[in-house]
Image (cartoon, rainbow over all chains, first blue to last red; front, side):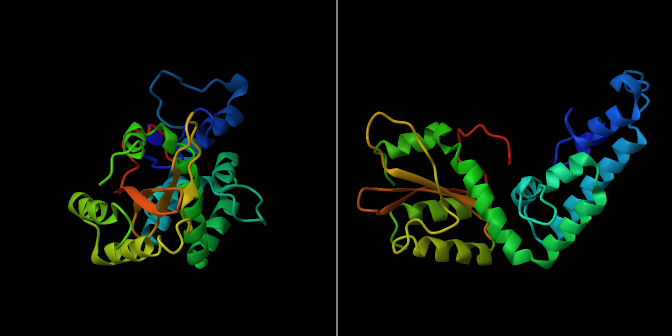
Length: 140
Length: 97
């Protein structure tokens, strides 16, 4: 399965690959579904683009956590979409514009990624029993 | 480093995740600023529901260190470091953003 190679975004039922399938195939039914025909050309294109983007960002020094955040980050006012939504829509030209801006304005994007990642996990920190136990009086 | 718990967690992080010298220096610099600016960015408030008054809890992810920091602030805004690690704190069952 092509999507398995992707680090982010995960190609699920709502992802680009699935949408491409729905666009390409009447009644939303995939040709050869269950028949082991392999990925469609649109699946392969989406997977390649996602992989290429991840490689570019990784080579620029962004760690995996930052790359995950980048896919969901709303930062480019001109595009007015998150990289994830652009990827979902199949608008790869716009996606590469955002990638290039990210690489050209690395400090700004690094700071934004830091903030968005901290916010995302902070919202869920209360679920950590281990941290809660420490808050209840256990000190190092 | 004067934040309560910071030294212990810094040593544990170094032993567990083997950060580079530069990453350790970056982490030290961030932790050293905690006493003067206990809510410095990119730390974010973690909202919690609890029947009794609790210490303020904040989480930070510092891109240059690739590590998460969790710290609490008591009523006097004194920071207490609860966690430093490359992965999210144990017990958090969340998908990456």
